[in-house]
Image 1 (tube, helix red, strand yellow):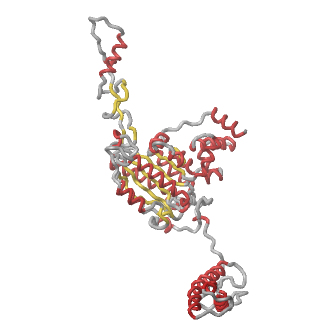
Image 2 (cartoon, helix red, strand yellow; image 1 turned 90 degrees about the horizontal axis):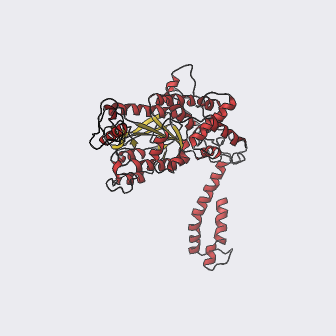
Image 3 (tube, helix red, strand yellow; image 1 turned 90 degrees about the vertical axis):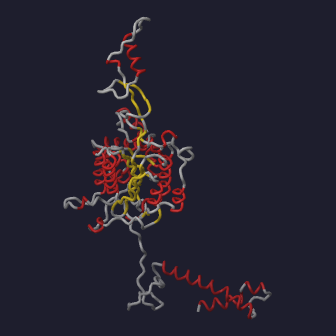
Length: 476
């Protein structure tokens, strides 16, 4: 009835009639009538469609749920004036555990062992990287000889990113030292200078005598290849930080492409972690692996650390005791524990405790770790305490530990609820002996790998004077 009434009103008062010189409320000619009908049909279709969608979104009233009709027998709902057998309409509320930046840090109940034994589906969800852009990067050949866009010196581009220790037998001369055991690379110039300093000024006919204590050997240094394990969080909470992950990967590519550094990729989401790409120096293979990443599901942070350690162990067996660097890119909001913790009857779901256990394993294996937090809201600690991200969080934990009477930083973070929610990056870095970074801090550096390698060295603890200054600043 409504459609018919609006159709006749359109025929008599259509703007098309005015175009052809007909007065309002006048029945048009057959040609104009056909033209009015052609224009009216799609307008009526979209009008009815919008009306039905509006009825579906209504939670109460006589027409609530009018478009949800059950095929089986059912009784009409109260107030259903249309007399159709309908299903009661209830709005669908998405679960909080899968929402972005969820405040829930405990695992959902009702998960059986089949959930944890099932490997995560990396191919489900929204693309983390643009496949077409990765393909164009993969087809591009880096101009290693001339430099071009690779941000590495020509002399070091064929080597690696890690500055080797001073026990190397080849490389660039750094300094001279007294030999320890057999002299491998003697430094003649430094030996003569040491002998001259010992004997003092000699006469013209006297010769300089060199003793065993004057011998000096060269200290050589060079850049060694580095095995980098990129541990990428592919959970749904990373949806708002995808751009930060892309920029970080591009910066690492600029510094490692053309060198002997090997890059491996581990992704974690849903029920666990999986190795997407074994360590390789071929960036074409790395791009193909990155194109397969999709974001969805929960955040099994502890399993990502365990899978990265497993990859490092395999690389050490293959290439000897080489240096490795694990770069974990996440918002550090764990909500799924390790599978191993479920085998013990007296252990409950504890994602936060599991990341501490997994990070301590990295420390015992002497693996470098850089925890890169892509959550921009965490920069408030650096602004408040006027320090870099890791130092600011450590200082905040020490201040709270002194107030609450705790003796350990990890114990303080686990015991304080607000710290458990936002100090995940510091917790991983502190337990593993590494360092936490903000993605903005790394992207602002000239060399991201150099900045992270320097930060993963043993850290100096805050002394009492710095603690007192911080307390005075906070009190003001």
